[in-house]
Image (cartoon, rainbow, N blue to C red; front, side):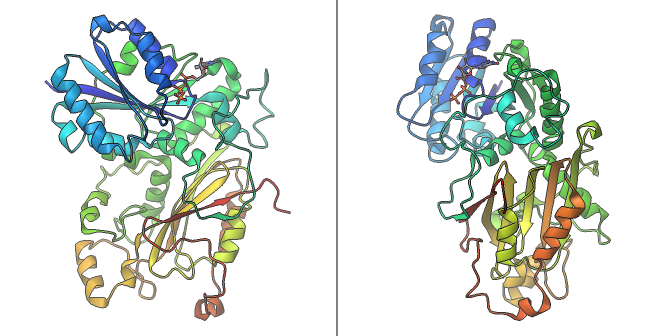
Length: 448
Ligand SMILES: Nc1nc2c(ncn2[C@@H]2O[C@H](COP(=O)(O)OP(=O)(O)OP(=O)(O)O)[C@@H](O)[C@H]2O)c(=O)[nH]1
């Protein structure tokens, strides 16, 4: 029988180690734990180990000096295969570092050597309720319904600073808020922790936003990560593709696509041609369920999409990104930016920052012969006579967000006919140019 694996994610300080320590104390199953800390000092592993009775067969293994979701991919596989060969245990829990993306970790258990002895059971994301509330739910009207003590938790690390107005950042580092939402969007259980530090109203708002961001996940609220062990160790099969496609922003785009006149099943945000290997993995083969998130109205959460077939002017678009409304929680999708006629660019906004990343090439930028080949491979791809597959298609999720105003502001960014013919060489462009490259644009709190 395959050994079930649970991947435990959550931002730095959300309470993963606390939850795991409690789990190891309360379960009578033999649980092996793999801890990944970024940094030389493996504090978490020491903590978990100190609370674990190793004589009962529980094992704590630490991976250090890197992040399992990127550089340590091979080491993760090797470690878990070795662990399985050398020890007997009922369940493996992986505590991912707070800055890791869950998807690459999960993929190790779906294909590759680790998929041999293991079965990915679930991906759990621990959410720091007060910090999430302050970051994503504390819009202008959020305070109105709130009572009780202020719910601030100190930032867990230096990257979690107050909004800054810094323009495009060439470092390509992914903003923390973006990672937090990616972890929320890619899981099947959300644990809303530190509920002792928020009011009931604040907790409910956090839950409502989480439901919108990932409608397919179960949500439980905890204090100090106290849960029945079975909630974490319950064996179910994690469906990687389903979890990816269930994210609220993807459903919003899907709803928009299905409402289009033309029936088409476009690839997802990065479904344009980057490599042959990727093409088949992004086909929206859905079960016909287009019920995208119906956000709880009492919290003012709105979900919509924006679709235009005209490039965004790089300077006006950058100015908009620096001045996005505070009520916007999440924006994600594909952008066509003037001066970048080849590059399909993913925009991902969370918290106060927008990441722009080249995720592929527009098919329309290839030679006619190659266009034909690619289009034959994607017969449902919507194709515009003039622009081919170039388009901007964004999901917008907000709280008390004036969607009409934001749509109008996005429309103001669209290139005029004269600009379409213009020379882009002297125009400041925040968009990256090469595949995989990204830039970050910060939204200021005051646009004046
Ligand atoms: N008030 C309160 N504090 C909590 C709760 N859960 C955890 N903490 C505290 O929050 C701090 C961070 O908890 P950890 O369990 O280390 O968080 P983590 O997610 O493992 O953190 P990293 O390893 O840095 O990613 C510790 O001081 C915990 O005691 C909670 O529900 N309420």
